[in-house]
Image 1 (cartoon, rainbow, N blue to C red):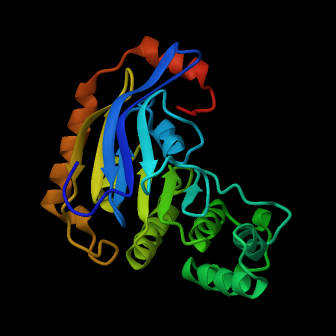
Image 2: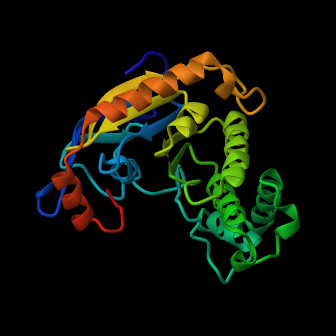
Length: 273
């Protein structure tokens, strides 16, 4: 569990099933996320990474155990923001309008909406596209808007579900650097789901490695690499290579049950598990 400040997010012996109990997604999962900490969830398909995000966001509730965010049962609100694999922008609003909409829902006055929108669009390199509509932007640019919109409300917790998975390699590289810089300045807690081991090691302070059948914690790994990582690339360091090799070896040796993964796929064709 680690030592230091009291956890901002706390999961204790969490279990979750779907399809009337036929599919066990999570079993006895316990870990903490401290204030300002960047934690990645990694593991094979079907290990419950997205389910964990939905539990932390309060979109679903555990069948067993407890999930607490800031000491209470979580529910969607201004302290929790989520970024998905697709940006999910409002197509009839401009880029500025999308960010202002999120702020309006939180009760911010119009001048404050405009000020924050301008500042965040500049931070993600989209100042010149403020009046563009989503369909006029590339996938990577849309994802930048999604990140800016999530950060606009200054959440204490940012949940990210494979936000860069659908992007090309160069765009992923740029957005990883921007995310690290914004996290370093704002220090919200981030829980980041990814299938990319290199991405997890590059971004995270700790990695929660999950194994399927059902989702359980295999181990929690500390990532001790030099900061700031967007300036000095740690991927050239022996420590990075060693940690990457360790995680890859653990995933390879977990073993898979094709039957159980097929059951998950049939029960959740949209990848909700």
